[in-house]
Length: 170
Image (cartoon, rainbow, N blue to C red; front, side, top):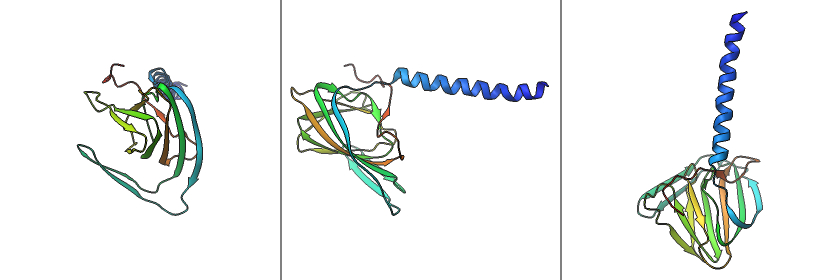
C-alpha cells in the first residue's frame, strides 16, 4: 500500500510547485495602463514552411531567426498620453511601426534604462523570444503603433507578461 502513496506524493509536490510558479508570475507581471485599444486586425498561418531571419544592429549586432513560423498576427495599438505597455515579451520577433505620436522603448537588458524614442514614421524590430521590454507614451497625445508578430502559437496571445526587471525606476 505504501508504494502507490509514494508515487502520488511527487505528483502532488510537482503540481503544487507548478501552481506556485504560475501564481508568482501572475503577481509579478506588470500589466499595461492607458491602452486605449489593442485590436487584432488580422491573423493567419503560413501554408508553406517559412523561415524568417532579422538582423538588427543598434550598437550590438543581433540576429533573430524563426524556423517554421506559425501564426502571424497584425495588431493596432493605441496608447493614451502617459500610458505604458507594461513589461512583456513576445513568442517570436515583431515588426512595429509608429504611425502617430511617439513611443519610448525600454529594454530589460539595459542597466542604464536609457530608452529609445520612436516618433511617427519610425519603425523597429523586437527580437521577441524572451526579450523583455516596455513601451511608454511619454508624449502629450495618443500614440498609435501597428505591430506584426511572427511565430505566435495558434490561439495564443501575442503578449507574454513579464516581471519588472528592476533596471528602471519610473
